[in-house]
Length: 195
Image (cartoon, rainbow, N blue to C red):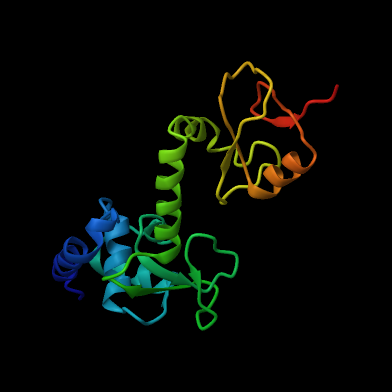
């Protein structure tokens, strides 16, 4: 049997000493605590979903099979999945494996995005509100998700009344090169305004 409470207490200490200052979120759900404890007990070693499931059975807990969310909260976890955008890819891991790298440093991808968003919010305070409205849409022009979205202001008045629309860098570059004015439609899709 795993000493779950001891692992959580140790994680809480590491979080408080090193990660809280970076705004890394400590898990509140039972499933996320289970996943983090399992990764922590095997820090620096690959952990599969099956291993976490085994922990869940032995501890009579539930595993939602979503430990990737730990990296979204700032925990430094690596993955064997090449397509991951929110945590580092580690070629030594299998496709279904994760590895907790450190409990003293935050996820570098998460931290870089956090700092980028803080700077963006200082430059464009209203844009933060626009992003929340458009979040599920992704880039307002191409729809790409999971990337950094930047404000674009050369738009016609719209039914949504946003001052900025979130676009990915390639769409901004294309719009600026072609001196485009964009038009926002009610379904939150942005297209070039054609005269």
